[in-house]
Length: 284
Image (cartoon, rainbow, N blue to C red; front, side, top):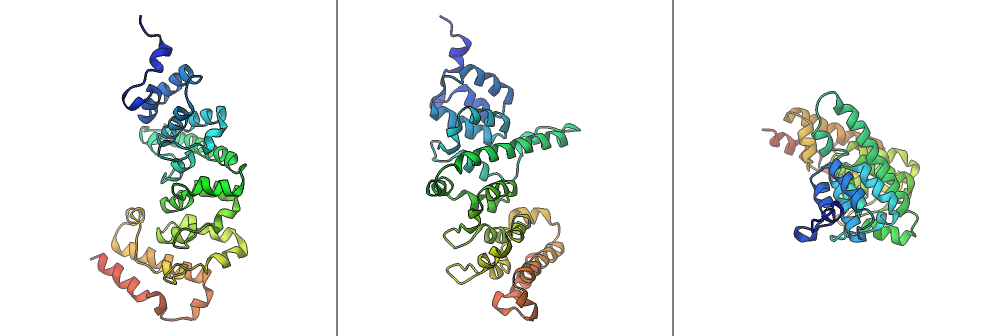
């Protein structure tokens, strides 16, 4: 007897994976949409969270949101790697990416705008479900298996962090194992747009700026480090422009958060001269 379309749609392949998952993994949006209508009533909870993460990884945000609204508890479900949908979104450098890479011409700008809005809607809906939980459970959700807000800060995922912090401001006080907040991590990775959020939190920033790591380093010391993120290296062409941008970033950070440093000429404690020398040598 030949299998019907419903049967074929539920036929598992290698590693027990369904066709809808493979379609999502490959970014075949129309096929996912068709297969979802064929299988939505027969998917297991495990199938659904695996599919949700795959949809996010392929930037198919509208179908991800459709799935999530049908099953809101997926907002805090975990896949086989113990990751939640928010973890998948936190890892993105920017949103969207893969979808718009496949589009050219006049449709690009419009599609970027549409998919970007879909991504924001998805993040917002996910987070709305999670913050209904108690504080301890929320901390567990965003902290395991790894703290997603720090990964988002490292990747420069501004939209993601903006939504989470606006709806749950306590996140700005979270620190990692080095006592680094998202603002410290933004400095280390030269994500000025994320760091600028510190000016929107009022006097609380005075508390965060004095956080120190195990070696006694605060934001001022981190800003003086010669570490340069790969994304910034790609943005700034030429060693001279790179050095100029680095020094400007360094000075702005000092003067805005540590106004007393304006009267200090050498800034020996943060090794300002080494900061200059190393960057000049790297440009040779």
